[in-house]
Length: 316
Image (cartoon, rainbow, N blue to C red; front, side):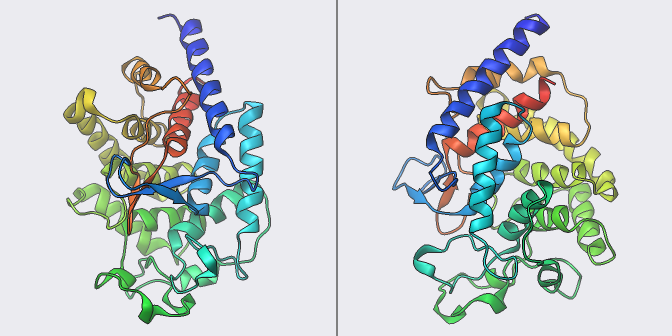
């Protein structure tokens, strides 16, 4: 396939994907997701009302210069800013104004980063996040002090004191390089260099999720993460060989974006056709679970946004 035809196919695919996402965006600007009982997101699914997914989609679509992408992003940013609590705090869910579930650094950092990138003001939260480190200087996931009723939570033992590598990657991506974040950055480099354990995260299902978020932090300006880029791209190549044709479009898009974030040279012909062929007739890519908690979470909107990011960036 020649280069002009390939770029034309990619642009058409991206346009269809953007039309699909725009058709699902709510009047508030929120980009919806699903909570389901299984990883294929096919059993006992219900709408998931959470600003976190909107922040992820906003980031991915920022790589497209299409007017419809810009409109989706602008409306998403308005929604994210409106969901802020005093002190620059966002919760995963504000269902029925339930404040027993404490806010977490993953949600706060991902939303704050996007607002910061677009120059949208919000209450300072840096000191709140920096105060949520353990004795090793690594970030804890949950801000326990901002729960109204921790005792009501029937969570597995240890979860409230959890240290998660993906959450740490997103937190340092937002906070940037400093003496306060150095130990968390060192922790991430060591983890990437030594190889992820099988149970690397309580929340994220696949290694490529960590690689995507870590390389995103690097591409956002954290040059000190450079030593982690070679080992994660090597493992991404290994994953592609192991999974082969059975890889999901979500996983493939995350791996492609990880390569691009890390500045790793890739041959588009090996991956682009596979992504284009997996797009469905309504413009979306199939749903797959991206993370978990009480349920498994993801949607066609989220999968489609990651695929659009990969295609938009690789066609430039």
